[in-house]
Length: 356
Ligand SMILES: [Zn+2]
Image (cartoon, rainbow, N blue to C red; front, side, top):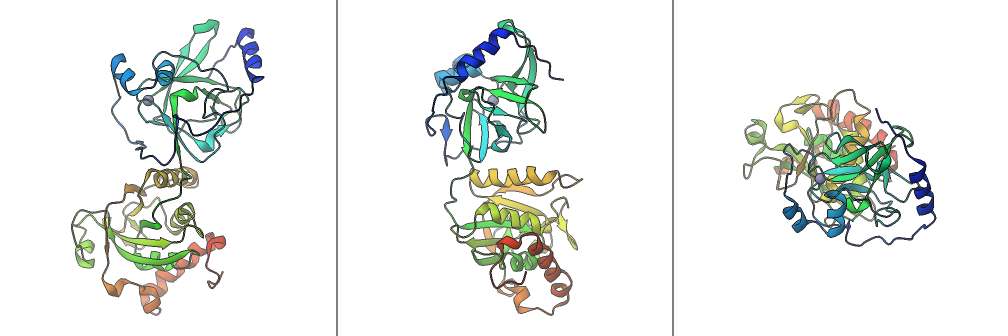
């Protein structure tokens, strides 16, 4: 339960600050664009440092907010007006705290969100300082002070996470991918190849193996399940026609992401589903998509999110398999129906010569 009593003093302060309406510029020190920052959503250990150690890695502003429980002036944070898609992370430990999709304009002058990024993001504790009874927010990983949560937020939670932007960093998801290759594993690669060949802006799809350690795997060695590789495919695409985000959308439309180690009718580790990312922007896009679709399924999402390392092209006879073998039993019974089902979900992304 969130319980709030705000004194009239602070309400006046809110009003006074709101009139400043300071225009801020985006892109200074607390905004990170395209920089490689690991979004660690799987952490298990807390981060504990001495004040001296924190001083070494934090700017004075960050230290004031996170370690001294400071409050920035309203409208002073560069992140207040940021509207780009991305993730707000803890400036101290990089723990993902809020998604841009939960940000809203509260008018208070502080970056505001209606829900945290995950259950690993925040701790809530009562704070009776400044003559108020409030619920204080700290980073669950490093205990850095972040702000307070109030019960006057918008739907769906009704909560307002009022955050000091100086305690955050922003990782944008909008940076254009430098490489126009995307890699996925979605069960049988005969099926996934023919699906992505139908998507506009896709110039080539290569079937292969990825996700394991063995060098130069073969269809037989991967099929034995001993290599750690999954049947995978690489999509070569023109980013001016189709975005990586839309490819991720097609990928999730093409699979049942809740199936562990397989896609009907193929089961085994080599048929597990994986969204490979090459940089943090891609990772954020994948993670946001998973968050978005997780409410549509009653079972947890089993699709793995894995840093891309190496892709091995499959044997020549696996390339363009559906095109070459349109009357093969599996192709007729599984690959083509799966392609039709998937394409029906993304009618806006098809090549003009593909039947809708
Ligand atoms: Zn932290």
